[in-house]
Length: 92
Image (cartoon, rainbow, N blue to C red; front, side):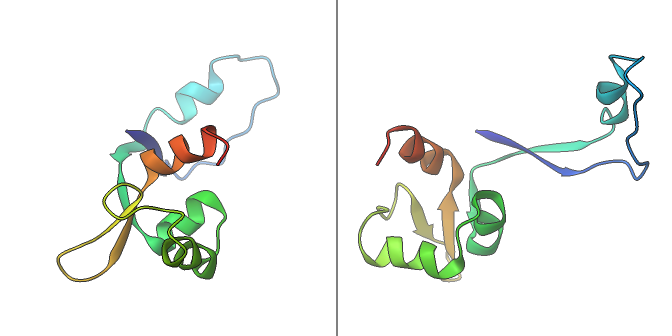
């Protein structure tokens, strides 16, 4: 599954280069979640696609239901981030 940082501590990260571990220590308090299925607005934020582009790929059959996307019980379309990255890597 894709790991996504969903929140970090509120301190601003600054490093003059003298401490090579400063970045890791700064973000040690980050909340990390494994995310597979996300709603279209989150998918758009992660990938840079617009809502319209995502829906067009679904309508055109480029992304397959059950693999790249599925409908949640409440009718929302959820996108499979893991399968998206596989699609990108295959050069579709």
